[in-house]
Image (cartoon, rainbow, N blue to C red):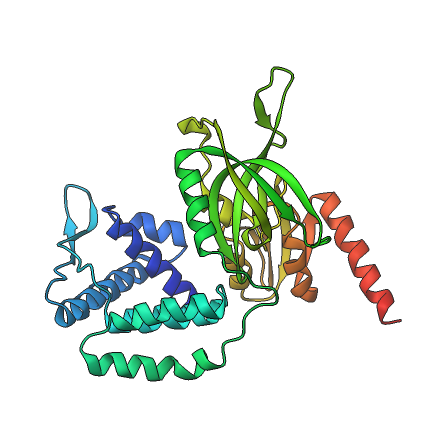
Length: 336
């Protein structure tokens, strides 16, 4: 798990370097709870990776250097726009594992990826490496073709049009409810693409207003009807929806109000908690246990908390603690 944590840290810094940001070793060490030597090793790993990329593709001239004026490491040079063979293979493996698409969609995407390999012998090798998984690929139950729908939704998010949808809920898949929504973000989690959107309704003045103070989550393959409306919505910069911040606080795409939970973890390695809940932080540390706080949206975290068994105890809020007690009592009754 320590390796996983290090990889996530290195990737985080790599992405920020690509965005033109400076990496200060002291601040990064404090942020990640490690010493500065660990941060230096991460930077050296990034440098080695860029060196390998440059040897593989001379058009990639990126390197990481120290900028005294900015008091940190920065990335200079230019990146090749084409994917390397190793990147193509990695993306192909991720797509196969995600089960995000129908077989028809997946085959079309993989064929285009493999066509990007060079030279031809590498194309053949990559095809052979993924052939078995491709052959045995299993679609999810009732998986639908959604690529065009994804693009249409993305265009409406960009143009800020209100949208009218017919949505089949999981509890009643043959019935569809109508909603008018402000689409704000597309997310992917646990095999499915989701649409984050604010449900709106007309007030007494005939204006569309938010029904709730937090966004709803719609599974895109359950959207049976989708119509762009003439009306548009406005978003101020201060009130804009940030999907990255939302994604850190939502589990299994169950939306709801934002709340702070406090957990007691029993064990010597709390990294599984910290990795699963990106907003988590240790507020109390003891010899073989610690207390962790995290911000989460809704009750989606309950399913994951139950999977942790006796290692995790919910301390706050009281309502969530009581809900956990009730669920555990019901589960125990099944085995009596």
